[in-house]
Amino acid sequence: MTHRSIRFAAIGLNHNHIYGQTRCLLDAGAELVAVYAPEDDLAEAYCKAFPQAKRVSDRRAILDDPSIRMIVTASIPDERAATAIEAMRSGKDVMVDKPGVVSLEQLAEVKRVQQETGRIWSVCFSERFETRSTERASQLVAAGAIGRAVQTIGVGPHALNNNARPDWFFQRKRYGGILTDIAAHQCDQFLHFTGSTSAEVVASHIANYANPQTPELEEFGEGMLRGSGGSGYIRVDWYTPNGLGVWGDGRLTILGTDGYIELRKYIDVAGRPGGDHLFLVDGKETRYVDCSGVALSYGPKLIADVLDRTETAMPQAHCYLATELALTAEAKAVRLGAVT
Image 1 (spheres, rainbow, N blue to C red):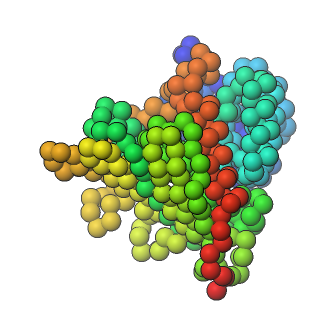
Image 2: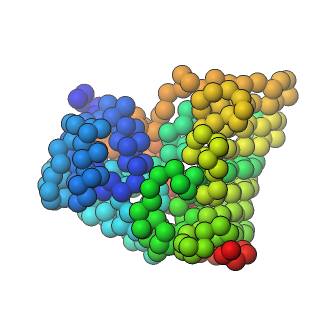
Image 3: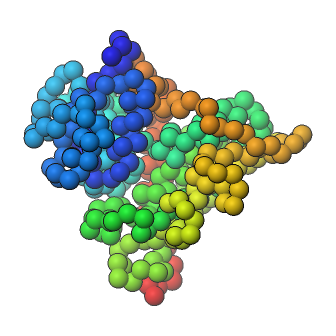
């Protein structure tokens, strides 16, 4: 481990996003030292993937170790706020899976503790931080490739039956609702690409059209956002058909005054193989941009932030606002249709 790295540990493994979070820090040179999870099956799978992680039977063994600088967590969504608060009060910075919280009340408490402790509370918005096409789009937009970015259209379709789902997945109070959960990604990208530092939810909808056996599952959601730098539209769902071949055809369109960028993050339908496809249209041409060699910056920047007490990976205010927008969209959403 170099002097520009950190030691970190995992607490809570209930969502598979913990693997991406862990790799994000490992790839940036951090050292994984320990893991706590009460579920034997989850802990065994994690330790098989990351044998350097020592499983501990008491989370305090991690929280009381002063050499551990950061905690990563993907516990059940309604437990993430408590995990983060406990970690911050123990002097640790935190990287939490989205949704970082499931209510505005939890967000207020997390914010209060973060400000009291001076710790970092970073939500890992993987649709931006873990995709090379989005990283490249950030570079292009910052360089003025499409002029001023004024609108985003973000769609986040997911497959419902590609994994076995635990009971909490179907309990709204535990997962927070579809806009709280999935749409947090699209809220983050809207703020990031339009440069909005303030924003509001104009309208939002939720629905359960196809799963009457699980009435608390929201499998469709949409919303419209208005910010200081532009506007945004969001659509998220659990309708990905089995024939697609991947868990979701996630896309983002960034409209600029001099062109636009479209990202097809996980699949180019009936097109090029693999993921991370970027298409750029400007005043001169339409071109495909290869993103395979683009380096991801979130992990290295977050490690630097832990060491230097900076906010280069993501401003704390941005993290709060993206989370607040998703929570507000969920809270004010009009329910469409009826369970069939």
